[in-house]
Image (spheres, one colour):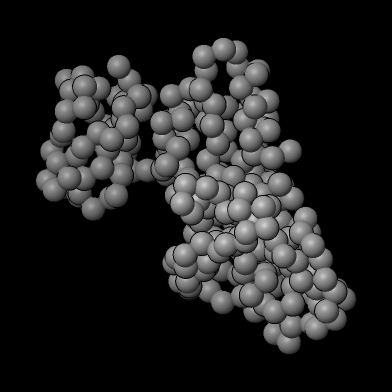
Length: 252
């Protein structure tokens, strides 16, 4: 199933008029954790999209793939990379030709399928950790923690003659695959717990519900905060100088 397929299944189960989205596409060949957003939670998508990710990847060595994964055209070269080390830190990475990144308003994979492969512009991504777990013959497994927007199959291809044969997303920020369940629904106050909390009194909550700014308080350094009242998330706010601007409002 693609990420779009999963959203479609959930949307059908929720009934008409309920918005459903997800927080980070998985490639069709990949498995693992996908966060599904329902109803008002879809408004928080960009904050969830920006969370770091963790993966387990199996590389096939001595082979090349035009897509960087097992779904592409495969070519055996027999050239095994001499060193199986994925660098950590901030690197410049080009989105692959077979990706959903848009150039000129069109997804790169659509251009590639027409025989017009184009890579995206290089952009900085961060590899927090990349550990070699095991190696057996022409396969090697890695555990990788990286920033949002990192293409793991590009990290594998950068080893040399190698492609990503298996990819499993094991975590998105504080959300772990081991805790995932089709029937598990988190209230937003828990799902957004990775954001610092600013409790509101009743008067402040009423102001925020109408988009009114609040004083930032003593520590305006957080990039975003969840504003809460009576056990509910009223809004997500971002600092604007000495004030907090509600940028996503949940409660009317």
